[in-house]
Length: 595
Image (cartoon, rainbow, N blue to C red; front, side, top):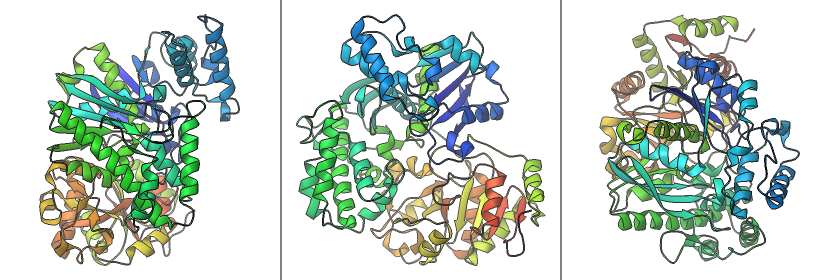
């Protein structure tokens, strides 16, 4: 079978490698560049890291799968045999839109695609890419084949392929993909995706609605939407509910979005008018109430679409993908629908996951029926960097840190004892996770019993969060702790859904229970992450509590740590009290300084 490289950019660049039809590496560019949400350009660092993990080079790659979005100007032929003057003018206008982009890393093909659509041309945007020059300058073989796939189709492919369902409904939502599309509803059956509904009405994007609210509350869109979600639990939706219903609501047919701002000059006119309306509407209201109203309207419309599409198709299983489904409270409401027996949320739900979806679609093109034959229940997203023992030791030695190299059982014992004494451990084990969540291989862990930890640990990490930290829970204890686990049990392995915490646990684990009584758990299975399961189970033996507090191993506005260098830096900077990295145990930094 072929070596297939998938890549995606937009606001979260990433790459992945499939060998013999199996995903063997996937890495977000931000983990390599150390620039949060690094995107809008070709993910060269992630490409090379994925190939290194797989033991390959660029010359080994047979196929490259990509969305239409991250090729620099030098690889594009702007007026390659133009169909007519109108097309040439449209392509020229696309180039003008992109002038001034840093390092000329331009989203040229995506703009061309929109121009072609509006002109009614059947030309494909990849015709404007100088493939031979791209392959030569980037170090790939001249016979390497390129495959371009639609943004939302990539989202749908990742969701359908990894859910493990024989058949299911598949819904994708975000700010915007190719051709101004922000929503699709499809069925997956007999290994094939069939798209039945598309949302592309200007001004009605649910993703842009939430991004607007994020920005107007003083946060950074495409990065801090989780803060809006956390803040919403403290507010009252009623004062702004009717106003926001003008901005986002269910369409008349019950299967799409509507708003009062569909008409506007150009495709972005409606969005600008809606944004201006919201900005004026929130004046004088608390940000808690603004967040609460936005979350309520957002949930109501999306949950209704999911319910109605399940009814229309008769499907009982639903798989979702796209940035909108990073909203874990929304996912809880979807999973609670009577029509939904099981919900799967693709863990790399932002655009970073589209490298994986693109590669799956290329494989399905190369081997018709690949998706149907190879679909399976996703067991892991530990597809990233996995430093060797010698690499870890070299970094600790370079910094002059005092450490012990111990049998792993002793590393577990020291970590559990430290947590039981209200200390924070940096837990760095095995391959790095793919996607936005720290899932026990690049996590900071602590006891969930200290109500004040939300204050002092956030201060230590320079974070200003409104949600509590998440719990990593022994999977076999999930039903003891949470209400209604079953529909989202698989999704909860990847921390993509909230649950109501049973009341008798609220006071026992206050650090991981939000003000609304929910928690966002990671259900840890012994067969899928035995090292992390062993740590949690040892803490359970000490405390009687089958979970630990888990937060991502990074400080505010930095990506999750990738290698030993960043992990050791966290210890030196006193972000953590101890570091458990592989079989090395490094005590707190009181007398340890970097060289």
